[in-house]
Image 1 (cartoon, helix red, strand yellow):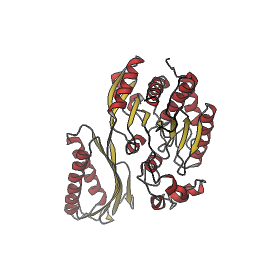
Image 2 (cartoon, rainbow, N blue to C red):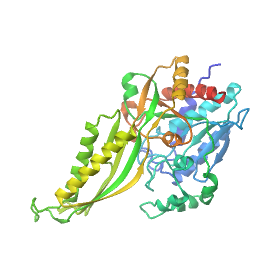
Image 3 (cartoon, rainbow, N blue to C red):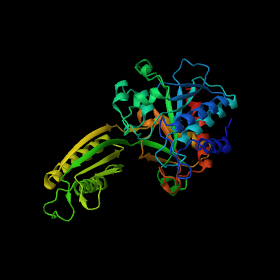
Image 4 (cartoon, helix red, strand yellow):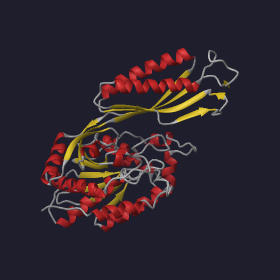
Length: 414
């Protein structure tokens, strides 16, 4: 029996969720554990219940909407994504995967077809790099990559810890060690997501089957030179923190461009100068470094060359560089069996598809520590994401949902 998703359901959910947004008219901003995020969670839990799911939420805010199978003692099949956004971002990133999962479970439930394993659509907390300096808070917790003490150590620019934020929002964060000491078995996890690139659009196909997920290494670097007068200090006498930082940024770009890795990127996304005045040579520059690759070996090689080059630049320019490593994550290759299931399902449904690599990380990267993962991509218009111009066609999300529903039903009966 073929299950066909309703585009109107997906459109309605995406539109209604976007009311929980602190920057209406200027893109979508829904920061993790903000009031907008908390209100959005209430909406999603209500909608999950309305389609017959049993809803639970853990101590870090991960939401689980479950359909019970005939043999609930078996390891479940998961799907899901996230609902938090970057500042002034789009309304599809992450959200598409949550509502595709809800629609998939609605289809399976209403089809009346039997299945053994529990099926669950999950909303993972804080996938985006948050104001607390950590990404994938919910899925990292599930995977055992965060400890309770980490929640006290991660602090916002306003000086509020992640621990206090959760406690203030009413989450029983002190239960963390009772919830997450053991990794409960999960049979498989599938995630639908917008592509955040232009490969599918270029190929004119609605679906990508992901081969692997690039993993980030995130650092902050602080370059300290000498603050001095822009006119009174000759070029030869300068120890300019910004110009040293600019050379470091160009080094990162050069190393990433010249790498023969299948996929590798290097980005300086945030920069702060002190004192940040037009006629003053900056004495300090602080910036973010984001390096991603599908290969841990290739990423480590780039990092080694980068660190060596930074040391040379610092010595030559008479500045000091302090580096703080935030995370150094391992890439994940999507499970071959899950890829085959998705590929065969797409072919059976006559939905055009291609294999693709995920440059961005996703919650599936963390979940790869505890289970086999697979991902479905649907196109992003003009390859744009993390931008108010982000847009994906709900008809494409619907096609991905049809594949997701059929694949989850197959996996639930394995």
